[in-house]
Image (tube, rainbow, N blue to C red; front, top):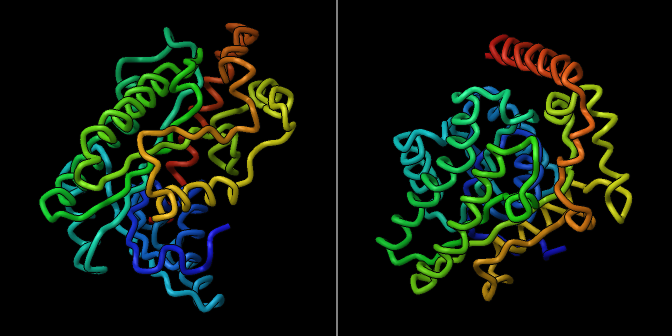
Length: 299
């Protein structure tokens, strides 16, 4: 637990900050006094999150402020817009949390080329686009900065049934280490967090419909016999974005209760039959359609 003003005066961009882990990390960054720009593709979701978090800041007499900006991380012009508006609002930019993600749980041969591209574009392309954009800004203006990428344990171990994500996360992790070596001379640090299971309602249900949900009970494979709590990951993220971690760069820190010690995170899905995969595929498609229809209704 960092002191309440540990990030006071810092400005941080959080991609995928409207929901899930991104929202939880943003909440904690605000508690520590940071100004945070949250971005994702859905402005309505961002606005709802920003209003909720700012109300919490007021209730707790905090000093952080939220700026909500729609952004597709696959589009460089939108990324440049987010950076520009962030600097206009807060006067500077000190950190970036690359948290936008996508995933499919599926036998790889069932995926279309487009499906594979979608994950790689969001996770890898989006990460290096945003990282390159903030790096150019920091270097040109002689400003030290910090990039934190949300990785995964299978970025290094590999895992069946999540190959597009593994490819993208693995590439992003190598970029993290490579740029840490190259940009250290500019005072720019890059690190990664490799989380295990940190369930979020909605996203977790869509990713793991039955019978996957029963088979994916992670506590049976985690030495600590529980899933992670969002506050635990938020605390680690805040530390790595703060000056207290000033001598740490090029590292990937695993926070998974020991799950990585038990081999590939999804490789045990060999037990799923072809018929079950057919049923799972239809369930996921229906859940995704329902989610999109709900988003359109909110917009």
